[in-house]
Image (tube, rainbow, N blue to C red):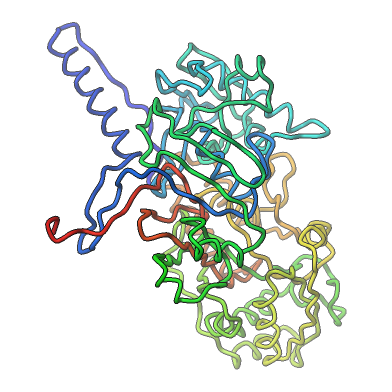
Length: 545
């Protein structure tokens, strides 16, 4: 990914001609920003459809409608719905993090973000966005995060900020306790509220600045109407209607019956004949990574029939990597997921394009096990959640070929499964995780870095893995504000991870978007369906060709 835009210095001379030139340039820049966020209708190269057309309404199928920001879960579909109503300092558009309420920013030092706000932005309730609203939102969310019963879904994002200072109505300065070069990636999820409006009407009636306003809202259906005064340009779709369905099968039936126009499913619970009903199928990655985790630090591992912890030896971890033919096990599991070469997908910053997954080699795997002192293999329990058990079932079969006899422990309830992992009651598990940002620095800091409660690093390092060399590289990346250099450092971390194997990457998740033919849509990172990026689509007539 390219570095997020930085504020550039501008110099205006006294002469009228230069002032006029600046004004013209500003108008052009504003138009370009709007065009970039809200692209015009275009005929696709070599295609039979015109995209980007106005449309009266689009009906979106979701698994639940749980509420309005900030009292919502950190879940894909409800975040996407709320993203149409509310906005953060940044936003994901066209697959990239871009400025939203923040027009630009600079870093006077590596602990400071000086942010220039977009001018003339109005909340749906009529108030004009001010720097004090940013301060209010961050301070309220941060205070809530440290309370006994937090309700703000992204209070953890606000907690990354140490202090907030209002410079003037359009400028705010954020200070962090430690360098945080990916802060603006996280600010996508911290929606800014109006201090005046919330204090008047209450937090449960907060309004946003987004491209859509709430017309009606219930657990069964939410209707959003286009904000005609939106700073980024009027949305192509006048009305978004979100409808809740109990499961993926009922979602697909809703599409087939014409009740909704777009949704996505994780499992392939549809027949290809659905294409004959005015629908198309778009497979896409949601950036999810599936992997095997180990207890590589304990002297004796739990749920293993040996005195010595086999996973403490990198030769055993490499044997497991070589024993697994990821493409075959995914196919045998009936999965459309693709094999991973590293602990990241291609769309994340820092992905190392030079890394290739080694070809499965059972002979070499057995040799490594023998060298590590396990010539006859060993027995171990593999923990997995019920919803993800098909892939671990194939892992079990393939590891048996090299003498590692796996007993599957399928945990029915997701909450029980995660509690088991975070309590350290495991030594061998399979987990699928969707990253929070498009920079793999954050993913690696969370899962690979040594646990550090002060900085929050290692928050998902469930088996207390620690590697000084990897930590030093991650710490360098975490203080590097140049995105290209940070990506270069992180690509080296990915190489180190594949050499040391604190975990074994298995698969990247493929989801399926099912879209009506007259709806224009391009998949966004993490499987989001952003209403503002939807538009009409129609076949090119003979006269238009």
